[in-house]
Length: 271
Image (cartoon, rainbow, N blue to C red):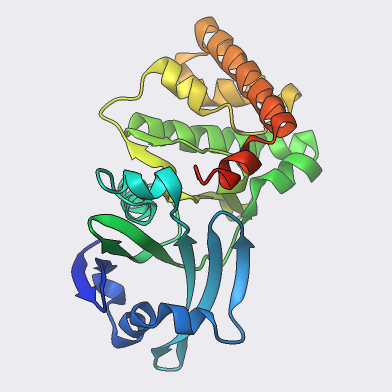
């Protein structure tokens, strides 16, 4: 996907050539005013705010855009002196997924405002997906027989990404959307692309560790791992490392919830 670099009204970033139109540029320049208008849909509000807006795309068409407003503060802001902002990483991650043949929301642009080399604000824009629901809903509601083929296809999809050097560092239930079905085929969309990294090679144990955030029901984990392994077969060492990593991760979640670490991090402005 080709793109253009741009700078306007103190904002600098990149925009996909296919979306480089006056309407999109105007949205970027007047982002605060546009997000303050009635009718803007808030999809998520927390550490970062995610909203959806529609703009006229010409010819009677409407372009639905999801805007992720990364709230930078404390150490996160200082890191941008040496590292890319989360918006820029989201842009790179989305492109890495698509280049690897995986699905994600089509990236439109990212832009950021810097002061003395430090990013003050950062935004990532993507086309709103017309399909898909969080896979966590299937984990909660679907019967085991219906869930098995979906998990097998998810395992093969993640394996394909690993084989091509893609690691999603927050491969969790909320960041995987599932669409389609038995007749049309199952499709997976991967979100939160600022956590995506591209590696020259993803080692065996790094692969196992990367799977533990998925909340796969315990009685279906073995089948998921077998589908991930494919014709090569499942190695006992892979199962052992996955099980140990899963146990450590679940223990960390329980501790974090009990200690309320995220709340303290926000009060101390670490995040």
